[in-house]
Length: 149
View (cartoon, helix red, strand yellow):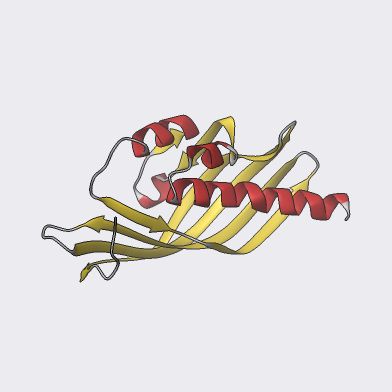
């Protein structure tokens, strides 16, 4: 395997640590995505700009309404430049929260893109900044079809 291919695979791995860590609330995975001072910037879509630790702290608080999240990445383009890199990827997201009545789920579907800046570290490639752009979003209420324990 060439060094360039190894770098690309390591970069994609860091990007996936973000998605799996966030969706499954596996914060040890989440930490593998970023440098310790990594930034997540949701301001292009009207959200917050915060550090990795600030976002983890906010989202790891107990939330009895939260049910699930899932957002795969695709169409990834990586540009390597020595020990730094940029990456662009599309994502699609699905989230679910408990609704107002028993068995009701408020779903949010959406899609957009990530623009990442990454750095090679002693522990592998890590995201130093992720900018998030939302292209579409739909919120709707459905009956939950999954038995949850």
